[in-house]
Length: 272
Image (cartoon, rainbow, N blue to C red; front, side, top):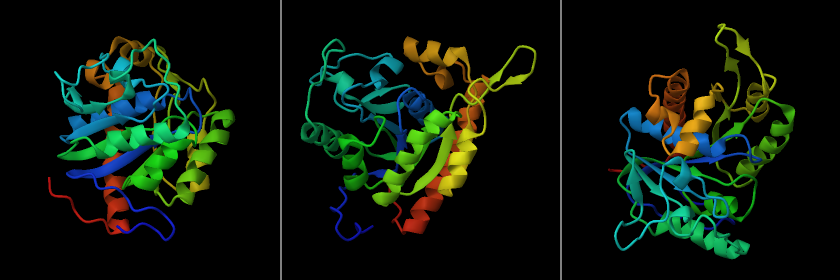
């Protein structure tokens, strides 16, 4: 696909069929948790999947996947675990050390992760963007041949305010948003009742405003945080849980919308 007039040409990522960015307007909505579990759910559907952590300042993929710093001379990048190919700044920098870089250096690191590693063959490369609309996001949206993006929000209005900015950013850089994911949507009590802890309907409202599908309403489960901190996401550790079932349905929707987005953009089929 040719870059739009005035936009830089897209980099080539050999052997990768679909690139999906997972974004949020603000932190604290569980975006990285969604990205990790979505990647694992896609793998459970028989897809070959990679997960790239584009948050240079606050990488979370190593913690969620039970990994730390990696000696590249022993273990080449991308690292493999749980059947996923993984890359993160957290593999290169001690977790106690702050990454104090200006925007251009952040953009260079993100571009290197994406374009200089041997990712393929993959059906999906999931890119966990940092929250907001800064240098890492612009680098990815302008240089990477993204199939589309998903925007993660929670139900309450304070989350929607920033999520709308994410939708606008993707529209301005001409990256299709394939859908909205409402995380922490509800809690199912032991009494069988649904409790809308963070209000309800925010994801649906955002999707309708943006004219895109609502891909999923993901339930709250305390084990999600337990699994993320413990280094094995819930889809892998508790594959029979209601949350894992919700992620498997989400993965199917993402696959459907990815196919539609690629077809509408006239992207050629990549041979794996």
